[in-house]
Length: 452
Image 1 (cartoon, helix red, strand yellow):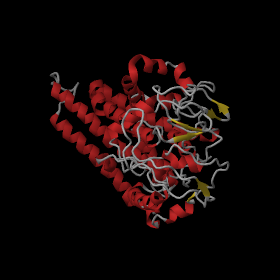
Image 2: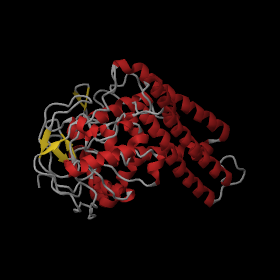
Image 3: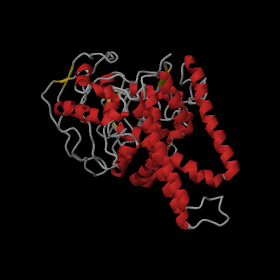
Image 4: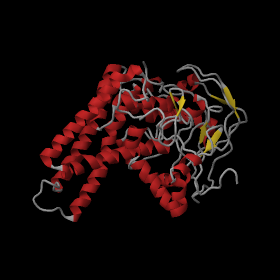
């Protein structure tokens, strides 16, 4: 009756970004205890090296070369490197962040509405500069909304407070306001944490194979229009339609559900695999009531939007809520996509995967001012996958100690590539994997097939 584990921790090592994988392990580490010590071969240096797009991966990715047969630290060793106070909760701080983000959103709303006329409410057509202003508003307000998104995400992990009922109540309200089915997503996101970079049972952004994408015409699309146009298509499908099709059809989800193999990219063997129906095969029977509550929350928000549309007109609701909502969705997908996707980041079949390997196949990236707005979810993501119950307001401090402990041993993944360039590189080079067995790395359609 519990969601999949999302707060378990161990270390795989910085070898994640080297094209050399760790030896196979067959058992899964115990929860939050001492993971048995492993040894892995030293990763080769990953300083600047060419990728398929012609860009160079900048320094900051794994470059240390620890001694051969480097020992992977245990959970206890990693946790001991982080001050105990980083794991302590503060209800005052958690609620302060909710009101802080509400204040940011209110300020953005008041500022833009004091300058721009709202379409549908103005008797005169809007000027071009006003439409441009609303486009800017959509991006700024949508980016601000992600703050609440991340805090609801914290609630789902149990990182908002030590009280489960409070976490679920706050998370349900915040996520429902953003049209997110709270408990449904909590369950599937728990699978993402418990099966990170697992080619069979992973959840969200599980790599497709060349064959599965060939069947839906993606390879032909690449050959017809070229890699740049296809990269634009990749960005569009991920950032614009990726989130809703994931919620409705579980696109980019895993290849196995309830012991049965699923089709990719769109599963249909078990019926519609969605996040809204209590009977969806995605969830166990014991979660039916929680799934109903999730859908109820989304329905209440949709009813409120319908009322607002009737009262103020569809164009007003479009610029005030729909566009910011889509921007917030894009941020969500971008974070999950970029923190676990890179041409040098391995994904594992059942014969190679262990929780230890998957958990540290995670990359920290800088996001500038958005780090502050989004509670540093992208720049402290390694820490988040190691200790997902650690409160976000301690994550920066914890990451400093985590990096100091892991980096000299070659176990910390960081990529300072500016966000637009990083997204473009991933869109151009990370299209599919050749197989679902063994250790696989993303390839692009511009690369030669394995048989060649």
